[in-house]
Amino acid sequence: MNVRTQLAPGVVIGDWWHRTDDGRMQCDLCPRGCTLRPGQHGFCFIREAREEGVVLAAYGRTSGFCADPIEKKPLNHFLPGSGVLSFGTAGCNLGCRFCQNWTISRARETVLFDAPVAPEAVAEAALAAGCRSIAFTYNDPVIFAEYVIDCARAAHDRGLAAVVVSAGYIAPQARPAFFADIDAANIDLKGFSEAFYRRMCLGSLAPVLDTLRWLRHETNVWLEVTNLVIPGVNHAPDDIARLCDWFVRELGPDVPLHFTAFHPDYRMLDTPPTTAATLARARRQALAAGIRYVYTGNVVDVTGQSTWCAGCGALLIERDGYRLGRWGLDAAGCCAACGRPLPGRFDRAPGCWGARRLPVHIATTTK
Image (cartoon, rainbow, N blue to C red):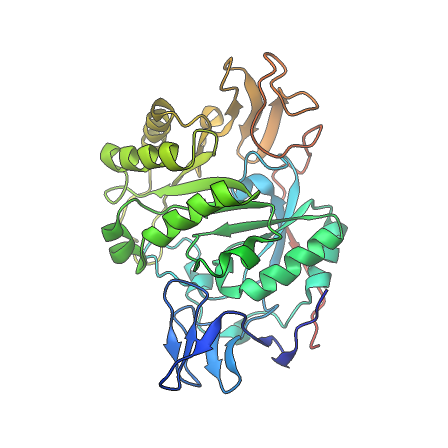
């Protein structure tokens, strides 16, 4: 693996930027295209301009590591029952009013986070913990892309998979390198109008839809999509209908869709939590629209969290929260009742990680 030169502990030159005619530097990693003078931070906070160029100032500096179930990402069709080493950094390139991880995504002091951890140490820790993969999550991994790339390569060198949990807010020129060594992605499609993204996320919907189409049709990345259903904001049947119609037309019926429950947080403390009935209605609506694998999350709902055969209706993977129950797949990943293949990436047998959530300590480095 190529070793990046660190200007200081946790600081490396970014891969996507250029100098403008007026002497500033433009970050080309995400659709914002932040234009900066030396000493200024981008919207995401962890990318900043220095005399050498635009740098990633949080390379290897994480908010902590945790081994937990792959279903928590959520990924239901990717190595079910396995453990994944999960971590993030600070900052975000969106400004969602409803952020469920705002203490990390809106953090503005990298000194609060761990000292740098080498990519090889991350992969070794995942192996030692008994995980099958590593996941870049909590805040958006797009903003620490160079570290994602290096950790994914280190994971592959050791036979591990790499998983991204992201809002998909990334520039087209950065996508190929960012996703080159990623095996699975869950993309958060937060709403389905430009007005929603402008008002609620301080961003734009179009780049997210473009990323979703690109992942589905131009890569081998296993794709699942999540929609956080917020009462009074994006929960109405018309909202769900627009999302589902586009989903079937552009992504096809076999990409899993997760509807998850909102809980009051950050700048939406007065908004009520999403009810299980609202999620169940959205799931029924998506199934009727032609999406074959639709799930509910953040609520108790064994039916809505389990996987059912799109051919004969047999129970294929029973889930109670993050615990797996009955398993109806054969060794080839097909329905044991009718033989219909289940789209996804499966082992011959389910994993046995369960609902464990284990903090993991990794030695830091100053190289």
